[in-house]
Image 1 (cartoon, rainbow, N blue to C red):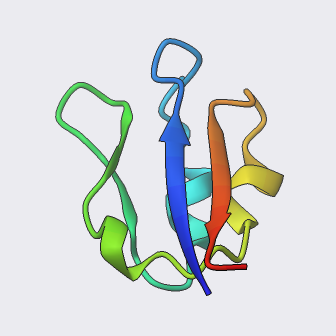
Image 2 (cartoon, rainbow, N blue to C red):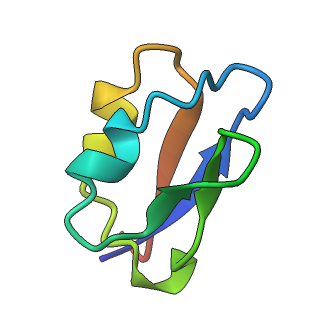
Length: 65
């Protein structure tokens, strides 16, 4: 299953928890200290980033379900 990540960058404080728990390395912290999608096509819609984000700044939509 694939996923599409939706970021609410205004909510992101750059803690990096979502990137740390992503099993595919889809997310990273950019030079401004915010989360960015670096390998969006590799998202498997596991939802770990969404579950762990303390600021509700990231959401995963499942595609092909």
